[in-house]
Length: 364
Ligand code: BGC
Image (cartoon, rainbow, N blue to C red; front, side, top):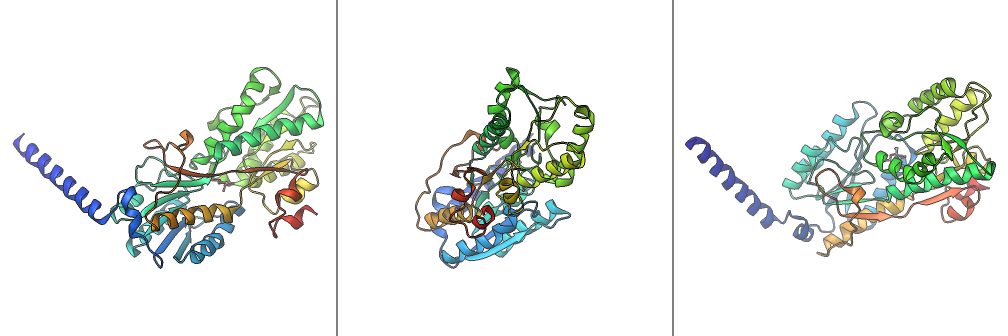
């Protein structure tokens, strides 16, 4: 008992010492800001390149970081052994003394130890595009409004089907992203906020009966997983002349194209399929009326928003953030900077991409 008490006191003393050390070095979110200055290194840990947005992210960060007068240290997680690889990269950034560590997590729940070390070393931790979960050691979250992305997808699915066939009921199937990505359930919940009432009133029918996130998620956001699930769904539920499949909720373009591939292989007519990311492989499909919609999330703007936040902190100012309950990470609601996603269909593609020299020509 006595030993325990002494140990307890020692722990408390260490905790107080640690706190004192932290505040004198300025590691609590309010005052750590002043320690960031031009020339400091910003580490950016990106996930594996499962979609084009991640491919674009490295150059986007390097451009924004360099233009703001900082040094960029941008790393991808390897395609295999992805989670340990990203853990090692974040640890290495801490060891190198990167003053800001921006993380787009491969698995948002697996970086708690690394971001704890980052905070202990006095770094600012920013979750980017994907939130970090199960930790208090994340200062900010910069992303597009993920719930809004899902709502736009759900509404696009309804609008696309209504444009083809004026009245329901409509037969649909649902797909979601990877369960290790904190975004995936938020996209899905956003879409279901639009679709569930229509399922409840009989406008929409899901022949497979699979409507729960766990049933419809796609491990690793991998195209082959979505393609094989779509093939199975077609064989089991749509082999006969009826029901016909009118629409598929797809959480992004990569999976949307995989779903369309499975439909084609089954010899069925294309249903309305949604997407996300404005990938260069999907825009021509949208213009041809094969994929119905995508979402435009400008990666350069998203990287710039994170760098702007760092610039604000480096001036000793408090960044403007929002509280979004969807960004509760199981421990804290991470103060967020949210950008607005844009729904794109054939109807507005040229207008939506008009300032983007890479995407705009694809609409011609
Ligand atoms: C991103 C999406 C992307 C998906 C798969 C998500 O976290 O927000 O834009 O399509 O990951 O890489």
